[in-house]
Image 1 (cartoon, rainbow, N blue to C red):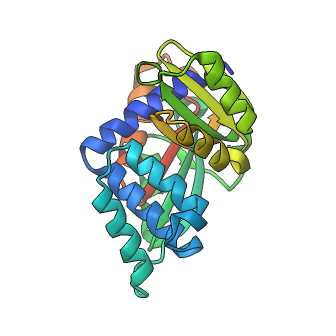
Image 2: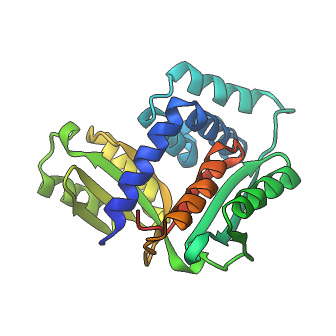
Length: 242
């Protein structure tokens, strides 16, 4: 699974930077609201909510903030209804970009996403225009320093729980699952006390694009920075080999 580790580590750093400016809490807050609306406020009966809570804890979201988010979504019939949207497009030199959003205003989000692409000399494509270049997978990142379990034991635990693949990188263990098996694998690891840096369903590029032109790199970073700054944007996936 070459290339995955690089993607995972970049994504992890990006999320930690976002956490510093509060963006990740906004992202997770919306995910909590959607999970509660779809499956109820009891995590015991809502695997999607359990997954979001695990993500929240991995990003150091305070428990009272999590509880407040759940209660607000469950108790307020007039609370905001977020719609899930996905945009696909290209950055400079054909870099493929997928944008996941949760929004209460489709027109605003579409305009902002289109503007981000345009300002970085990219363009928004039609649905399916780049997603075929990615595989949707559950991905769990485990910090080696934090994990006391032997690599072989951890691998067997993950595979027995239903994981598709396991890899040992320089500073992390990485587990990959089918999206439908993600929750059960994550919960099996959690039950055994395995500390997870990051756990979620993500888009893994099948191929990578290298950029050598400094202007292209600058423009692509412009697109990614603008998307990262947009509260409606939940996640951005790309196949730029940084």
